[in-house]
Image (cartoon, rainbow, N blue to C red; front, side, top):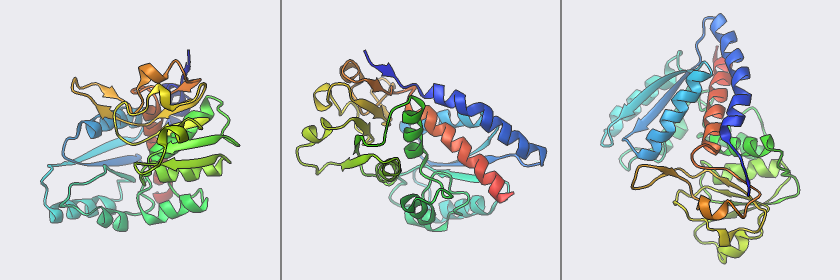
Length: 282
């Protein structure tokens, strides 16, 4: 029987400090405010949005949801985005990715104010993450995964860590953060040869590919630590991860469930970044 790494435990540990910091800002007449920019109504995005609103508001962060239809025109979207970017009452901006084909993610990455880029999209913040400069914002999911491991006392230094997924949102920045913790990191993806063998060498496995129940018990070694950051919605509308939890849980020493695992930490990091941004911009 493995130990469940529950994100709510980490979120609770962070909440009091975040609420105190938000109170300091409010005493100065500043309400830390996050703008969530969403195009369409993807079930995954909607689930994340609900969690972000709950966690941020509980930490004293105001939320402004800016939702657009999936067929929004490029000019309309970019104009609205720039207004948020220039609005002094908005301290953080979260843009759900990927954007529809008619929109240009590079436009967002090139124009977002790095001080408002609380999910680490732009090259300035990504460059800081990759250079070990802690003044930049790392993507929240990547930072949250590291915090989850630390909260449960998982030793990272010297461990073989495999990250399954190479996105700029999770896989790549997470690998850099883990290297900063002195782990030996391997990144796997769809072209990795002998994937099962590579995964079975992992002391710590982090899965972030967006494929429901991809990882089976046969793909991990006995006693591995498994962090599932996947968010998928099945045919019944239930949230499930990238790991086949029922299969893998008996074999792992620690495992994060979906829901209730890494997602709760991710949204707490989002609140934390927004509060930091409010201090920087005020």
